[in-house]
Length: 114
Length: 112
Image 1 (cartoon, helix red, strand yellow):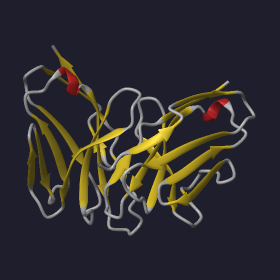
Image 2: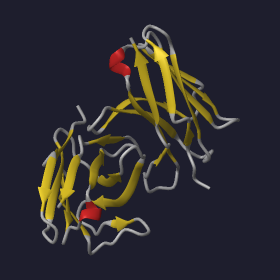
Image 3: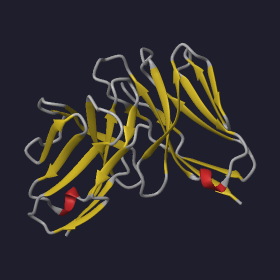
C-alpha cells in the first residue's frame, strides 16, 4: 500500500517551454501533497505544500508563477514549470500524506532544460 | 534553528553493522523517520519511531532515539551491498503543517 507515482520519470525540453509533472497516489487518498526539488548530492528542498481544492502554499524563495501547482483531486497533483530555463534543471520529487503524519514519496522526475 | 544534521559518508564492509546518526533540533517532533534513496530514485520509507519510544526494531533495522540529546540512529545489521544508498532522517514537528525537516543525508557505501 501507499504507492505514489510520478509521470514522466524523465523529460528533456527546450528553454522557454512549459513542462507538467504529475504526482498520483495510487491506493490512497492524499489530503496533502508536497513538492520537493533535489540538487545533485544534496538533500530535498521543499518547494510547496498542496492541499486538495485549495491554493498551494509556497516556501520562501519559490516563485509561485514559475512553479504552478494544481491539486484538483485527492489522488492527483500537478507541478507545471513555466517558461523553463536551464537553471530549472533538477530532480523533482513529490510526496503524499494519507491523513496521518507519514509522507510517501514518488520515484522522482528528472528535468533537463536545454 | 531547524537544522537536522547527519555525517556525510559512511563506509562499511559487507556483513558488518552500519550505524547512521542524526541530530535534530525540534524536541516537539512527534515522529522521526528514516528514508533510503538509491541513485536516480525517490525516497523509500524504511522505518519511523514515535517520540515516546526509545527503540524500535524491524528485521535488520534498529532505531534508537535519545530525546534528551535529540539524537536518532539507524543500525543496519549484516549490511549488504544492496544497502548502499543515501539515508535521510526526517523529523515531523508538531506545527500542524505536516512538513518534514530533512537531514543532510548520509551516503553509505558497502564494500564487498
